[in-house]
Length: 252
Image (tube, rainbow, N blue to C red):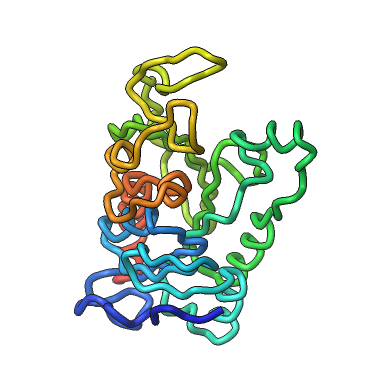
């Protein structure tokens, strides 16, 4: 794989190569997709570098195109990982995601998607850095240290996501009751509701502008990127919680 854009290119003037910049800590965003998680972290106060195996021209920050685990291993081996204060990882989940596991089983597809959660965790532990692993509801074997929902942030999606926290802790916020159904077709019947279905195609799925508005993501109009994204509101909350719990200790 080639590196489309170097980590340092387009770096804000306040960023430095140090783990904690003059004003902002640096975060490594693994399996970064189009940058939903990254945008939230930047809004929380981080400088972010992404890594994704696919070409992601809509990713709004510096990123390395290549295998995320190979990149993490190389950064750890070289010592360059010391540039970072925190690592976020969203390894592929299709094998055990609630939205796909039933379909996979019914079609005899089980096991065709590689589960990268365990090897991701192993490499993250070797960095010695605090980290977070994100997964949707399903059978992925992660601790659910945090569970977030779009209604907690006033979004037009439910989009439950679970987070395993390595080397740090955060308090679980209260889950807010949903205001209604996800709009769309179910078993031949159309249901209205305050949320859109941020996955797949057909079945009354939202338009691209509806998805963008519901997720709080405006910089990509690619449906696949929108349906895979983490709403920035989630990671802005996580990032602020991390900085609040760490910045005083690092500054000291």
